Image (cartoon, rainbow, N blue to C red; front, side):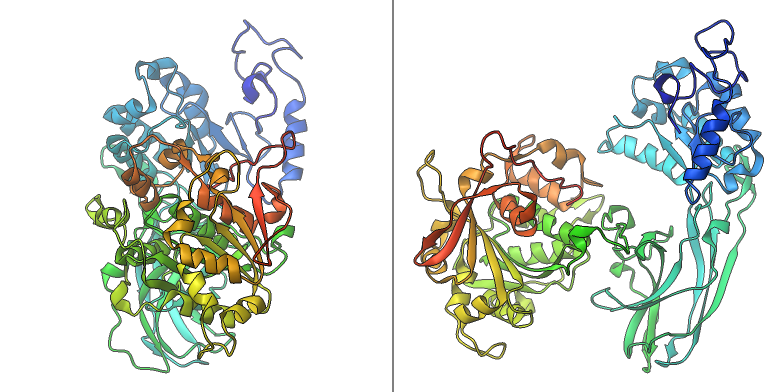
Length: 635
């Protein structure tokens, strides 16, 4: 509630005369404090936010309201009486309202430190901060904007603080039947303790799911009734000497008979727990257990439906790293207008392994899919190097798409390793490889054009958006293909029936430069076939466009969670020496293909290539606004 006062911090003017003014010898009505403003704000915020938590700066104000606290001077000796002791007087307020704030290290006794990194590196100060976190049941701390989270020593110290604050739900036991029938009720039970400092303040639903043992994809789920996670409380009475709560956290036991609304699918499955955001029922709160699958699921064991199984215990090698999972997201049940229609079916044809911008373009598509904007049907690979299959397979898994159909241009172009494929696959950080491929060329990867035929045949007419960001090998083979087990149509007829348009990165269309564009000349005959025979609208993004739009190195270095070991960031660093801003050739084709109505680019007048319709992307006319870089943290 930072609305009035200096810096919006409710002082100068103050809300009350509880403390002397900061910058005056005494309080003066309507100058250093505003009588009645406390009630005006309290009533307004209480009315406006009936279902949300409100936090205010000082614990001694708004006594008639159940607001949380955002104290901005944790660990600061000068603020003990005004801050810490007043918050202690609130008693059990922390059980229903969030308590937190920030560590302001540039004044008072903490001014002896030159950075936040030095604050947390000092053990007495760190221990003192943890004691306050535990006693006040803190669940968030800010004031760390300028900290370098890529610095290993700071990251280690920050994790110590992180583990002390907020909720920390640990599953101790989980019981379920090894076998059940499709239509029969079954009972699950588990025990959980909160070893953190605060509760989770909303009763988000606990969900039991069945996952595919190979794909890890959900095949069935149900919400456990009447489980109130907001009541899973931590311990109390922290002992600094013993480093634990003297009143230990309660053990909460949940036992529930599950009555399936729909028959369970027959087979062998993995039973898992998750906590979902109720607005979209996506897994969003995680337990502090190592058995974890990317996407927010905690696998517990194997379970048979109408089938006996020979195993129950999971192999720990199946688990994913909880800390590096950036796939969790919120989703609305009432999506906004740009999500009213069904997701756009998309096929990507890429030469990942040649230039580095393919990786970021691929990540854009995964992020579009997570937003529900597209359905990424499959990825075909136009670089004929075996490491490209392993890299893309592992990268799909990183985005929780181990099931992604892959195709490959056998006997195609660019068989060399490239500048980052094998190197990234071999990279070990924190004692583990950062990519874990499950498929290779020995996994019977189909021909790229055959996969394209299969995917097209399964889609509605005039629906698929094709994106090609490499040599046109697979697309040319598709156009020349004959009827097969997937479709009675030849390639040109199948494309004409199923494809809405093709967005291709290739060619050079401006007058400023004059040289052969790379994607086109790598397989020149394939490019000729593409422009000769492609039967639907073709939108080309030329070299000159992406050459002028540079993706900033600061984003690669700072914007990705666990960026020091994120495969995209590592690949960028391997590809060339940082810092460098890289052209966005392939990204322009992706951006236009998915959001053409956003008017990031203008289109040339329609041209005919061998009597086929085609247009070229260009910058908007001068004065109409230049094409902005999209928000790739969101996209």
